Amino acid sequence: MTHSVPFLPVISADGHPLTAAQIEQNFSDLHPCLTDLQAMAESNRCLYCYDAPCVTACPTSIDIPGFIRRISTGNPDGAARTILSSNILGGTCARVCPTEVLCQQACVRNRAEDAPVEIGRLQRYAVDHLLDNTAAAYPFARAAETGRRVAVVGAGPAGLACAHALAVNGHSVTIFEARPKPGGLNEYGLAAYKMTGDFARREVDFVLAVGGIQIEYGRALGTDLTLDVLRQDYDAVFLGIGLGDTNALGLVGEDKAGVVDAIDFIAGLRQSEDLAGYCSAASVVVIGGGNTAIDAAVQAKRLGAEEVTLVYRRGPQQMGATAYEQDLAATNGVVVRHWAKPVEIKGNGHVEGLVFERTRLDGGRLTETGRRFEISADLVLKAIGQSLAPAALSGLTLKGGKIVVDETGQTTLPGVYAGGDCIASGQDLTVQAVEDGKRAAKAIHAALSASQR
Figure 1 (cartoon, rainbow, N blue to C red):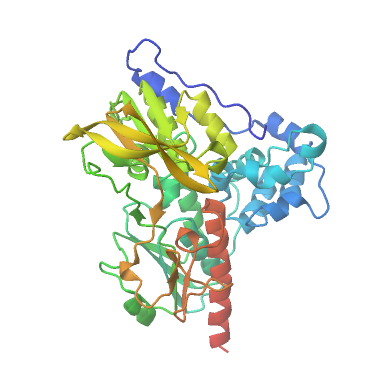
Figure 2: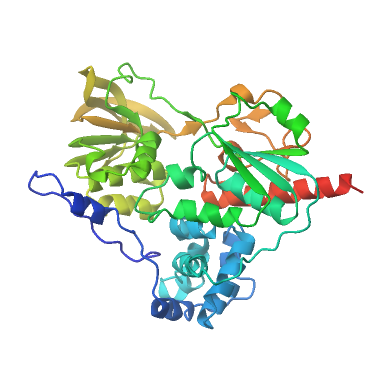
């Protein structure tokens, strides 16, 4: 067990819709911040290992024993400075990282007690403490202005991490963001019960407080921005554009009302000021097997849907969602059906149901069995992945639907770097995107410094 058990949501058992108060309760913090006493007790469980495996398991290489020791000695702000020096978005990562397959899986406490140190919750405790401490000095000092200008496309985790690291080194950064708010998936794509209290905005404000960074909104690559112009106007360019297109099922009837991309459903919910009025669907089917599918399904249930069914074409071991997320779906009343693929969307104008065909593995290949079944639905959420929108990427080499970069994050265009979901650097996680941004910023700084000599 790598997380404390979350509260069980209020679920209607009598067919009556949930009240606004019940829905608000359902979207309260999944794992509230530790109290001072809880943090002290948990931090004292750490063995402060030499060559700690938890550090190796963290994509951003946070000094985990170091920050936990600072908590145990009553210095949570010092712990936060240790965290943020490696991961400037350590607050978000503490909330949403799959710690059960990263740092906490590597914790040596697993061997003796089957209960790792709750690293993620300790990380959140420290970062939240610093952000809440209005008297604390900003932990990063900006170097003298270098006179060099860098364009960052995308105000998501990769872009923000890159921009902050460059600003610390004295470069001026302009972030071009297509949406009206910064944060990327941290703002628009994570379950509302994981990112409560407008934390994504608070974290962006903290990043920008270093100085030297400005954001221009409503600026998308391929509309009023081109790589050619950015390369002419700036000394370097970083692309943190994510994956702009959503994959289609390829079925007739996919354009029916009530068939929605799960990422759009989540984004709308995150921006809604009326949770009780956001979704009136009684029967919801989610197609997919990743964390986005789980987020969509669980939130639909917490909004009051009577029946939520998640359907995945393979088995639980092949799902992209972690075991913890799969358990979360089960404890929230989501019915998960494996080994089935959609073959037909039924309805007259508006979706009324889906037909699925049973699947199985035959010699390692997924095959159809000919056995079909139907599930009624008045809302279908597609969570079958996203893909790169290549239209504005002329001149860049793409492979497997991702931008090709070298070990420093540089693309095949000189002076253009990329990171986050748009490149194939590992798992599509916030923490990996932060590391991509850091790595590219280091290379950009080195290149700009060398050109000044």
